[in-house]
Image 1 (cartoon, rainbow, N blue to C red):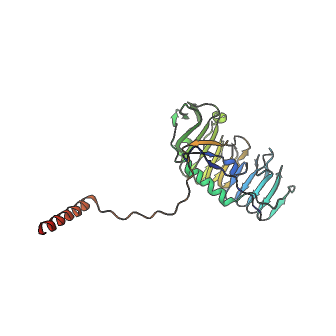
Image 2: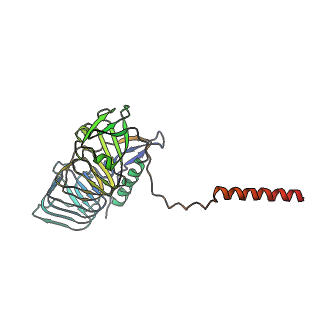
Image 3: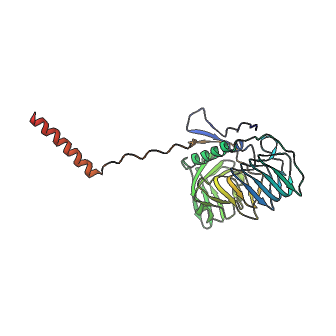
Length: 309
């Protein structure tokens, strides 16, 4: 099997180790959706390309109608099988590590070249998600009546926000303050289950990334912005997300629009967080009182020896 090199998504700045350029699109080859494992959906579409490390199983579905091919020419890249029952694959070839089964659908061109190392790409996404969560926040998220009120630093550039998934889900509208149109907003979102309750249109003028760094599921309903959730399953029905998506597994009929792709950005204070071997637990230390008694005894013993000498 021939494999092309995975694009380098994070390049440390030559100005120092405390800043890095995050380019998620380079890692996923410009795909609209990336899954580490399986992608399964029905009755909807992805306007751009799909890159999936597992099986792609779709029914009554369209892919890459907007001609946003990944890796310079692929509509679907699958590490496993591709199964399409009714629908269409547009504007590019497909690669499958397994079989391609089509029913009530025209056959697209098929490539024998896998353009991505899924294991390496998935690990890089996990490292980026872990690194971003450690970047110091520059803004705050508050509740204003029923809205999520986003308050930036007022300096433009990149603003970082730390917030829980439960808090964001409690707001049905978004109010922005202290921001400059076009700037980057990165939300580090804690919690196992993520999602939103609408009203996100004010974010349309910004470069937005939702980093669900510990999520197990994310409901993609109504999201405006890109999603980095490398450990999560994407869920949800009958709605739309406008942005790129990076998840572990896709199991949703949410429509994915080829819009609001996350633009590469230099994030001050960002460093990749690599997996490290387990740290050996520290040796047990005596409690303060016990330690003091031991030290007193040692001092006494030394004094006795000196007197005898």
